[in-house]
Image 1: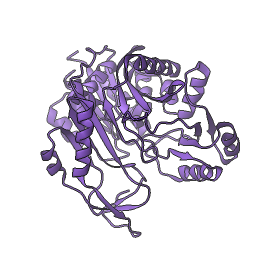
Image 2: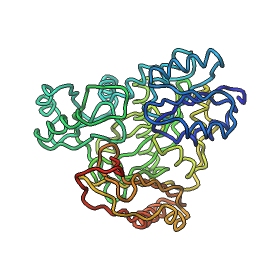
Image 3: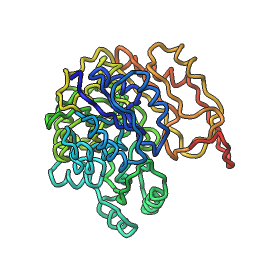
Image 4: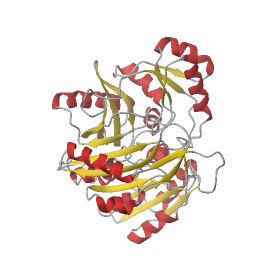
Length: 431
């Protein structure tokens, strides 16, 4: 394994690429990188790669199509044994590359289904996978029938999307029209396009009684040559700002019977889509009628590699690298604590950050913190265009109650103060 040649496909989103390099370098000293430069410059990642002294090549690609050709040319010079990405936006070129080169990976068709919520729903209906009622919308002409068949209130969402962007509850037909119009006008980071939207049956996700958690969770899985390893379940914090995620806790507090039912539903959904390789993050609603699949993602949930490391000392990013080489995981995670990720949602409207406590000060005050990541600086303009969150932070604690108590104290200590936004943007603005 030490001489295997791994490729990291990077450029935007997912697990931090410098941390990914640290994990992949535990598997082999030959790690090439293809950085898709359509979103941001490659220089910081190039510096991290060079600093590690890894063998291979560091290459840039202009866009997704170019990435496939750049990797194919690299394979001619220095044959690859596996291709890994941690980014939702790079899954399709990864699948095209592995199919073209005959390497372990998901088929392009399976990835296309996984990235289309509309196609997922159709596949689930065909295979009897429990999921909410839905209608696919591709034009304004579809709105009346969708509202009539699904009923209102319902959940409107784009077929292609991530991070709950443009997902909203619509209670009236007028709200449905406004949501559809606004979603079509909103910018998307994806370089692909999907004209479909969904209106779905509303499921009660906000709170699971007085448990302190939301009525949905996720299953974190790893697939190798079609074999599924369901590594853990993670809970979600109650939704209080629409469908903007509030946070997650790993491992789950669910009892074994309920966890088994959730895992079985996730397994059925994964197989229905046809995924066979790499990380899978499946979100599952906990309804009175049993588990229902919200969505399947053909990659690790954004914070999960860091959460696995914090709660179990488990290098999930390295295990994903092993899967890219066709190798089964070294073993399951053994949890010694709880990792709690907290997102701080942006309230509806336009705001300006009037002040917040410096990160270094907060980190010194809370040894339980793994990281704190504000997304805006004082003086910057804040809205839900581009991101739904003001900041995120990760706490490690011996148990869930302690983790939640510390998270509440950290949130107060961050003291992010918002004032109504100004009309004229300045150079400091960032949406």
